[in-house]
Length: 251
Length: 381
Image 1 (cartoon, rainbow over the protein chains, first blue to last red):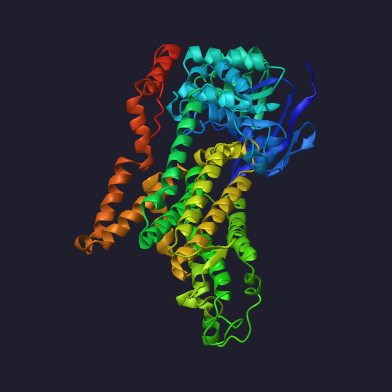
Image 2: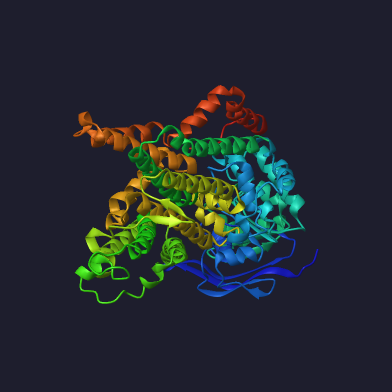
């Protein structure tokens, strides 16, 4: 695996009306890596993803994608450069079928006029395969609003795969999933390593251990520790940060 | 493919509707009735315009009547210039300008000597206005109820402007006493079968083109924007562009409806771009089914038709408004997706296999997750 960084955050600070969500954040993710961001509540994990994908603006500092500054770009331009994002709150298109959801996610062509004369069902095979990968192939023609919570999460993952971004940012992809579903998700993520660079915010340590190469622990808007699962868990500062929430094993 | 089956079925519905409105003149020869039906069709077209933006993209445009009115005025201006004024004779100023002491024809009236220009302007002017307003609204990422408020305000402003500029627009009276529209040697008299056919053909074409459009990828993305606007930005689509595009398409359709309306009514009036008609469009759409173009058209025809016949009947002279109100409440309560959803319900009942889709969904969900505990079933409201 190459070690050339694809995403770099340099000294990034984000403030929400005086509250410093993130300050002095430095992060570097290598191409093809699967990085997990963990940390106690309020550590700024979600904000870190938000600032990369353009949802919130950095007050200072720099976000680089393949060495290019994307700090001030609007979110759709960042998306076009190859960053996909899944939010913590499931956001799918409820009134549309699973198939239609995936077709929206398949965003090779973006123009309003060219798409007006482009009819669907051209890329059907690819999308069916994708749906099969996340186990939604037999509900392709159901409205997405009918899906269970776990299926909704998978649909979101499938949407990101349809989008096929180089970088995928995931905010708690296994929230609300059963242990079985979580393991299936881990399998999918492991199969994506190398092809996509993935940054995952997760609380489920079992899941994190299953998938991650490198774990970054955040605390109070900064990076506290970085390393493999064992290193991080034995880090004294990490243990201290997690005190009160029952230690890292239960986080 | 079940997805394809539904599209074919819907297309069949559209075609049946188009044939139905096209064969009406075979059974009705009464000129007064035909004129009335042509009027309903124009309202149907107007309703389709709102369905495109509201039903498919979630943009509740309460200023739809602006496009309608501007289209109507463009047509009226062209017809007015071809009317020979009594006071000044052929080639003279329109009568209301004479009454308002206007000396020469204003520059923006000049090009309306040409029908071709008027027909172009009847679409281009509403689109230009919509584009400008849409540009500000959608670039600023205004959405939801605020779009409704802004468009309603715009409607009131333009309405006042037209009433205020009496010298150029005829003010409160509008533009009246118009000559008969003539194209390719056909006279489109308000009470002629020709005009009815013109309205029916335009409505049919709009429905079929609209159907193709909503099944295109752009149509799909617009529906995604309706469901979750923010999410669509993160796929890299320029949502504002998409919204403004449909806003302009909707304005163009409403502009065409406005031009037809002038022909049907034989005048243009500031009441065409007033608040009551703009709100009526919303009601037509809601009653017929806003997320279906043919439903929206049907809604307009049914509502204005019932309205017309009730208010014409001696027995309901005092109570027709009450009856209409009760009807709306019943439909909104029991058929939230409009009259058109009744067809879908009937279809589901007749085809039990089709209806068991949700049962299969539950089964597959149960088999996959093992135990259902900890799962929040997401209902579709």
